[in-house]
Length: 506
Image 1 (tube, rainbow, N blue to C red):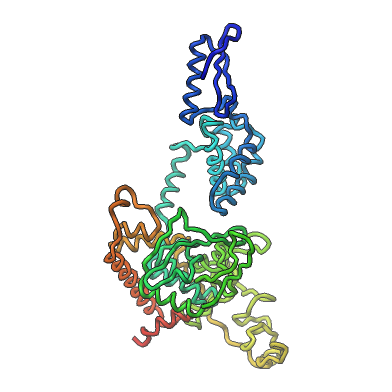
Image 2: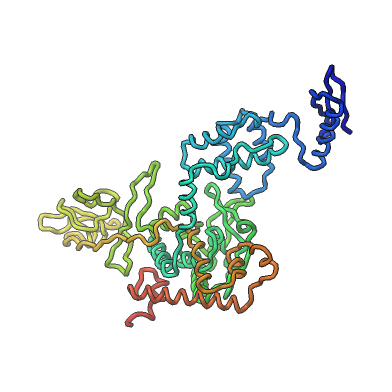
C-alpha cells in the first residue's frame, strides 16, 4: 500500500512497482499529496497504464533487442523489419535514450535518408511500430508517429489520386497480357494459364504461385496456401491475414487448368531445402521450365513489365542497361515473336542496328556481312555475295556459299496497360463482379475480405449467386476471345492457338 515519508521539509511518495520493487518520488509539499500520488500509481498498475519512473532511459538498441525477438509475424515481414532497423534506424538513433527522441529530428531523419521516398517512409513506419510498443512503460507519446493533417497538402492529394487511379485490366486486356507473357517466355502455356488465373480469380501473387494440384477441382479452387519468397528461398504458409477461402471457377478456366495439370503431371519444384519452414520440393500447378518457382522481381523485369508496358525496364548494377522496346518478328503469328531487344532509336540521330558478338543479325547491312538462313548468325560475305564457309554444330553449315537471308520484318509492341502490376489484376477483378451485379457477400468471400458490420453476420453466398458469377466470368472470357479473333485467328501460344481454331475462316 502506498505511503509517505518525511524528507527534510518535503514529503516522498513510496509504492510497490509491478515487479515488487519499492519505487519513490520526492518533492511533495504535504503528506496528503505524496500519499495521493502513490495511490494513483497503484491504480495505474491495476489498470495496466503504469509508467516506470525510470522510463525512457533505455536506449533504442536495447529496446529493439527486447522488441524484435518477441514479434510473431511472417518471415518476410520480419526480414523487412530487420533491414529497416539495422540499415537505417540503429545507425542514426541506436545510442539514444527513448526519452531524448523528438518528433522534429525523426522527421528530418526521414527526409535525409539517401533512399527512395517509399523506402524512407517504410523505415519511419517501422520506427513508429517499434516505439508504439514502448508506450506507456517507456514513453508517453510516440515521437515517430506522423501527425494527421500535417505535411504538404498537394502531396497528400497526389497520393490520394494515385490510389484512386490504381491501374487494372479488363477481361480482353487480361487475355492479351497473358498471351504476351507466354510469348516472352518462349510461348509457354504455363505463363498464359497463370496470367488468366490471376485475372479470373482475383488471387494474390503468392496464392497463385502456391496453388497445389490437389486444391484444383472442377468449378472451384481452394486458396488455403501461399508461397512466400525470402532471400532467394521459398516457404509456404496461410494467405495474408488468414484469408483462406474457396473461389468459384468458370468452365473455361477448369479446362485450361486441367490441360496444364495433365501435361505437367508428376513435376516437382526444384527446391531442395532440408529444414522447416523452407520448401523441400513438392508438386505445384505453376512452375518454370526448369522446375523452379517464378521469382517476383525477376519475372517482373523479364516478362510482366515488358508485356504490360511494351518496354524492358532499365536496369542498374553490373548488368546496367537503358530501357529498351520489345522488338518482335512480325512474320510470325500476331502479335509477333519477340526477338532479342535493341536499344531504342534517338530522335534526330541516325539509327544503326547493333552488331558484333551477342547481337543477332536481323536485317542486312552495308558492312559486308549478312545473316545465314540456317544458323541465323552473322557471317562475312564473299565477293560474289554469298556467305563465307562456316560451321554449325561442328560441321559445315548448309548456308555456306548461299546468299544472305532476307530481312526479318520487325516491329515494336505498343504499351498495353502501362504501370500494371500483378496486384493490379486483383484490383480489376472486383469491378468485373460489380458490372455483373454479384452480391457483396460473395465478392468479399472471393477476395478474402471481411464483410463490414452486420453484413458479415447475416449475409451468405447462395448457390444461385455462385452460378451467376461463373456464368458472368464465362461470358467475359468468350467475348474477350471473340475480340482477340478479330485481330487474328492464330497465335504463337499453342494453347491460345487451339482456342482460336473455331474462329478461323469466319
